[in-house]
Amino acid sequence: MEKIAYLGPEGTFSELAATAFTKSAERFPYRDIPSCLQALAKNEVDGAAVPLENTIEGSVNITLDHLVHKHDLPIVGELAIPIAQHLLVHPKNSGLSMEAVYSHPHALAQCHDFLSKHLADAEWLHAPSTAKAAQEISEDPGLHRAVIANRLAAKKYGLTIAAENIHDFANNHTRFVLLSTRNVQDTSMEMRPRVNKKTTIVVTLPSDYSGALHQVLSAFAWRKLNLSKIESRPMKTGIGHYFFIIDIDHEYDDVLLPGALEEIKAIGCETRLLGSYPSAIIHEENEMESTV
Ligand SMILES: O=C(O)C(=O)C[C@]1(C(=O)O)C=C[C@@H](O)C=C1
Image (cartoon, rainbow, N blue to C red; front, top):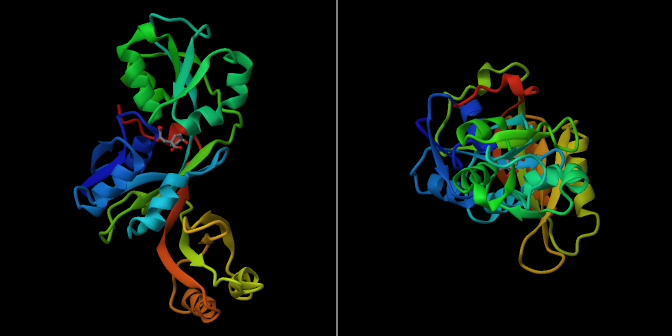
């Protein structure tokens, strides 16, 4: 892989994930997640690292929805990385007497307890990414805004860490997926310890068919295929119209998964394979290589 897209600017968690996926690829920052996917679809890059789910905040809906509704970009790898959120301020400002706190909505949500306790009177403002907030505040100390971002962003944009590890739950991780239209072999995934194989599918149930979801689940159950996630998302075609995203702890083999999908199709479901890929978790922040 030569070029990888991520949610920019430099210093986001997405950049950390992109680096963890592949050190050799040149990293290209984009303004938002849809632009990363668009860049891959237009072959401006040959990979994209995008967030899918956080342990505290749940799914990153914009990624899921764009993967399902707008593109056909296969998932080729998955990494869960530790997310340590810190409160950053411009060195000319001090600590917690700020007019506003500025960050990505997911980062603000991950620190809700801390903000309620220490910055309840400040405005909580949404930024396109954690590092974008850090970059803007580094350029304008007069805004009197604190930022929630990672250590890399603090270093990159010359901000001071006013409070460390302010996320509400200790085990804060975000799952990132690597998307690519190429047959990727040069990511660092295979070198990681404890790599599992996973498959992600999208299932649309037939309308007015009692017990359809039950039958879908039993197609996996009697084959002893473990599901690690099932989530419904709106099809955007009307109230009550949903599809399901299902993660299966098994690689797409020649027998079990094709058999389960055939069984599901036979009851009138539509299915789509989003990818079958290696999956790993990085437990500690110090296992992440810095990109500074
Ligand atoms: O803003 C960033 O640094 C991102 O990479 C985005 C993002 C997200 O979309 O959830 C990624 C990981 C963290 O959960 C917080 C923010």
